[in-house]
Amino acid sequence: MKFKRLGKLLAVGVASVSILAACGNSESDTTSEATAETKPEVQKVKVAFAQAAKPITYVDENGEPAGYDVDAMKLVDEYLEDYEFEFVPTTDEDLFIGVEQGKYDVGVKNAFFTEERTESFLYPQEFIGLSSAGLVLKADKADVKNLSDFASANYTLAPIAASSAQYTIVADYNEANPNNQVQLEAGEEFNLDVIQWVIEVRVDGAITIEAIYAAQVLNEEGPYYQFKDDLVYNEFSVIKTWPLFNKKHTEFAAAYDQAIAEIRASGELSKLMEHYYGKDLYPLLNN
Image (tube, rainbow, N blue to C red; front, side, top):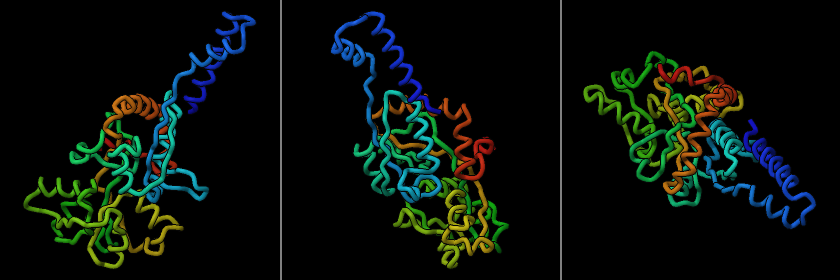
């Protein structure tokens, strides 16, 4: 999908033909001026991404930006002729602060929607991807399929940072189920290694996303591959994920909306999911 490259080639070709027809053997400086007038101004934007969230956003072995969210934004970059993206790897904390303060124009990190974040960031109309949220449990607790089961068993849950959207998922469940609540503890660390907590039996279970679980437990190169038979991942929700824009970039967000909608319709995002996650989550969205 080389939208931008193709667009630029067509623009240059049309401009060249027009100049030759109108000017014939005119001065070279006149030709240069006419060409410059037909070339659209390109706006450079900084796209921050969490550098250690494989396979969603990460830096690969060659030092290049990679992951589902990153590659989705690369497709948007190819689509938008008037924008040029610079991808900047960083931490979760710096991404949030940097986008809010204008150091970065947009950030991607498998971000869920929360009302609290709308105070600091501009959410576009179109989501960028989907994420499978589920419970990580020891294999002997495999019959616990969802938050209701977890609460009924009176199990302990690994702490979740209060600013995390996963915290909001549990909080919303508790609000809707006052008589069967999950024990929810707000953690101080945003990237707590919850799978390790389950392995060490510090808690009964934890919430994570399937892509992270697969990379850490099911992948032969994952840090917890040796425990793959001792753990289970039980999906209980498929959730939309979003890029976070600086609040000033309403025009840029609108351009993104048009691009990502057409890219999704083309099937390219489904291909990215199959490549990075091993399956396409879009058919599960309505379920």
